[in-house]
Length: 204
Image (cartoon, rainbow, N blue to C red; front, side, top):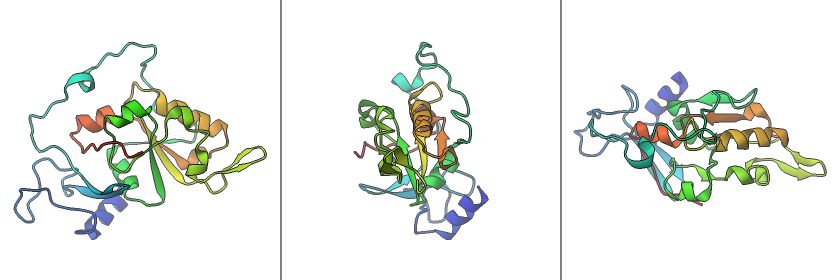
């Protein structure tokens, strides 16, 4: 995390920006951290600023405010979906979104993705995760996949009650993707939205 904050400070004007309608140098009332107001990440549609909603009275509404989806199938997911996988929070995810060597994957089905996603994430539905590992640095070989050059990936879905990204992670590992190159953002879209963070339309 220290590396993230230091990098953000060095990137002033190149990836970190003050929020609109604030005096120059003034921090927003609702920042990412005490020292970081917002971060700009590159997406397929161009740069997008990630920040938090500035209204202290902002609240989740509709489906995102639901606390008790029926289990099964919407059961609380384990903190670690598979051995060797790292579970991360929002600041670590933002750091990965700024790293061109990391692929952030929204593993939800396309209908969920179309309703909004985390800026910079690409959509690989959990049902297609194994078939599309070639997009994540693996090469098809006679035995399935050679993942010696797999890229670092981070997967997320709807929240701690959503099994889509944990299912994708386990299937990828079973198919040969190295667990140590996978991170899991367990909070998913519900926690991202709960924190008032920027959501963008799906990017295909």
